[in-house]
Length: 280
Image 1 (cartoon, one colour):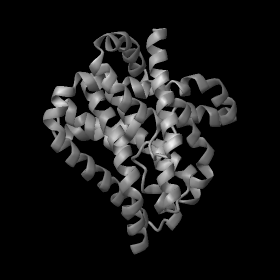
Image 2 (cartoon, helix red, strand yellow):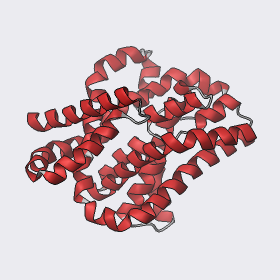
Image 3 (cartoon, helix red, strand yellow):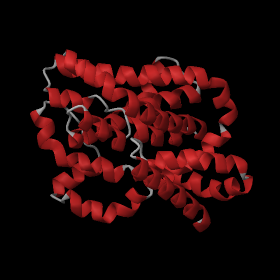
Image 4 (cartoon, one colour):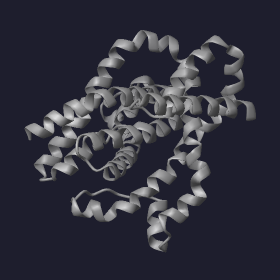
């Protein structure tokens, strides 16, 4: 297990180093995942070593999002000012009720939060195992990725505009379905508030993870690959964590969607959302 965790951490560090050196607009763990995949495909022995640790991390992926989710509590005043009804669940309510500062809580949760990086790289294992099906479905998946990402952005800006939200809030809403580091960078580029965007991203993930199953059932969508890819596109990491609770296949496609959405959004959303905001 130590060797497997060390391998994940090395590739996470490599991804972080390349992102910082090249100034790439993607999270380091996502780039590390892209680098790890060829190694696992080339060296089956490494895949065999990493698989048990990767499966253990992915089985508990939802737990790793708790520290970030509780951070929503920091921005309740801002949310109230903008008339956004965002529910903070579970531990966030407990901290508010007991008056525990978020900084105090996060100090004790740093290790759990730290494991998010290796858990992202662990997605390489189920992705590799689903590679034959990915090759067959790549065209519809890319179409779904573009449609889903653009629909999430346009609908968020449109609904916010109809409700009278400020320009800064509209810009903060635009990247709500993208993983947090990328979303905050996009929001900053188009005149949004990165801290508010972080709150909206977490809230979107919670809402998507809680309601997606009922929506899929109502639409009679049963294919785990389709359900997973849609959930990863709309609800990023928290949706991916929920997908892994259902099945490894669904989680693999959700993780793929989360990573590809981050890459596509980093390039396309600043242009699209910026143009839409100027038009409004």
